[in-house]
Image (cartoon, rainbow, N blue to C red; front, side, top):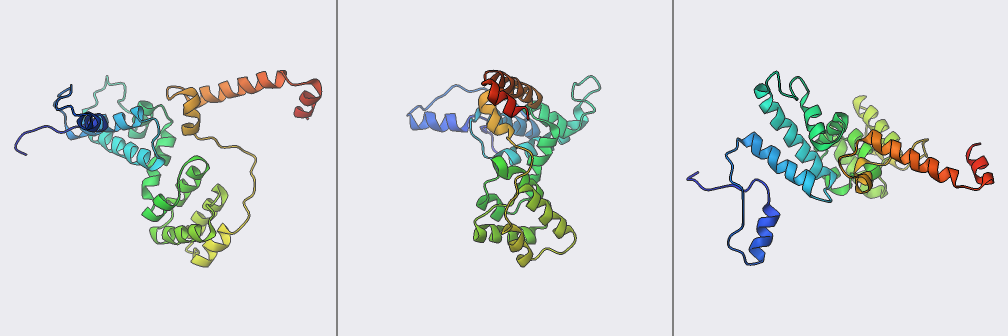
Length: 234
């Protein structure tokens, strides 16, 4: 109120310039709606920061989805995004599948104890998505158990906890028993898109990543001695 300007993107650059002793710095002044400002701000955070925590990404993607929903009535029939769900539009903006956008948004339903006490990255991402469907009071019990057991749940354990919560059978003792179970290795290896992006960049699709990885593995296999190749093909 009363005039003035608001920084939408470039807070760190502005602070760095201030610390360096500059009173003035170049900037672009635009008239924006609140939704346009949110999209610009979150685009800046998601695209220009090398390392962004999953919870930060979850909040930014949720803000984008909400802003796109508000703008939905403005999309004309000729607009390339017309008729698409908001998660699809946001996924395309960020080079990820819309289902992955939905998974990230689910993380916003985690209680603070799980957000802060459990680093939802790498192999902890999918279990955290499962835990986000559990009622808050039981999430808090899980957070206490994770701290006590010094062990985070596997995907299978998180699914089991979710199912028992839906059946009203989840208690502190049940949670402790599940988390104390030895984790079983499953027949799959999960590598997150965030882990792979430092090798492929953010413009490459998951399918392209997989194809490239398989091609490199085939190339590696061909270079192995005959006895090693025979062992791999058993």
